[in-house]
Image (tube, rainbow, N blue to C red; front, side, top):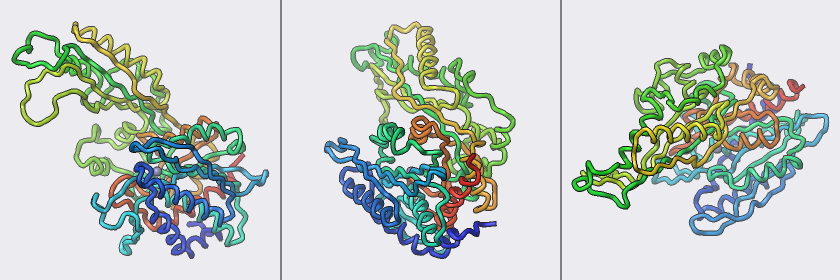
Length: 476
Ligand SMILES: [Zn+2]
C-alpha cells in the first residue's frame, strides 16, 4: 500500500509545482567540465542555496579555491553545507547530491533542448540534462522538507546536506572538505544516504550497497632507439610490440578468467545468502545483451552475469600507446609501446595488494621471454572497493520505505564501477552509507536525451521522506 502520510499526499497533490522547480533548476546549464560554463555552475549553487534558505534550511556556502581548467584559473563551485533541525533526541542523516551536470548540446542528438525540461505527456517523462543526474534527487530532499512544513508535520530526523558542484569533474576539493568537517559540521551524523545512482532496470527499485574499486596499470616496453622498418630490422631485433602481446596474453582468458596468481584467493567467498540476492534481482540476460548492443555476455545465467559485474573482479585491456593504429599497411616496428589495462576490485582486494601481485607476475612473465628490451609495469591509479552491511538500520529503513512506496522489496545491487564520494563518507565518518536511487536504469544520465519519469520524481521524493520516517522507527 502506498504511503498515506500527510507529507506524501501533499507531494502527490502539489506535483506540478514541484515539477516547475525541477524545470527551473534544469534551465541552469551547470556544466562543471567546461570553463565557459563555470558562471552557470556558480549560478546554480546560488539558486540552490537560496531555495534551501527559502525552505528554512540554514546553508553555508563553502568556497573551495581555484582550479586550472582549459588553461584558465577559475573558481571552483562552492560546496553547500545545509542543516535542517538539530534536535538531540533525533537521528541525524546526512544526504549528498551534486548540482553540476554533464555537458549537453542539442547537436549531440537530443530530441529536445537539453537545458529546458520538456514533458512527453504520453510517456510521463521529463527530458532535460540533470533531470535524473542529479537535480531530480536533490530536489527530492527539498520536496520532503517543504511537504513536512506545509502539512505541519514534524521532520522525523535532523538533516545535514552536502551538495557539491564538481561531481562530474572529479569532485575537486570535496574529500579534503569532508575529512576536515568530519570532526565539526559532520561529527554528529548517524548515517548517510546518497541518491545519485539508478535502478538496475526500469521496473524494480533498488538499494545499492557495494561498489567496485579499481587498479589501473601501464606496461612500458622499449628497445630500439627509434621506430624501425620491418624490411630492414624484422628478424634481427627483439620487438617491443611482440613482447607486449606475449605478456598481455598472460593477463586474462577470453572467458574472463584473471590469470594473475593470488587475485582470486583474496576475493571474499560467496555465501548462499548473498547468491540468493542475485537470483531474485529483476533483470534478464537479454536486458544486458540489449544494453551491450550484442549477444556477447560471458554467461547465459542471470546470477552469474550479475556477479561478474557486481561481486567479482574483472580485468580489461584498454589500449596500446605508441602502436601503429591508422588505416593502411605500414611496416613499422614501434620502438616503444605502452599497454594499458585495469582490474576492477572487490573486497578483500586492495589496490596495494593487486599492485604487488601484478608487478611480480608480469616481471616474471617478461623474464621468461628472454627479451633484451626493457620492461616496466606501474599502477597509474587505484581506488578501494566498498561494501556495506544491509543488516544496518539505515538499510532496514530504506528497505521498508521502498516496500511502502513501490509495494515490492528492493533489489539489493552492487555497482560495477565506482562512486568515490561513497568511500570518502564511509571512511571519514565511519557510518553506514546507503545508495538510494530515484531514477531508472534507462535514464541516460551521461548520454543524450537524459530523462526522469514523472512517477520516479514524485514517488522517489515520497520514498526519501518515507526513508527518513523509517529511520526514526528502526534506529537503535
Ligand atoms: Zn550523478
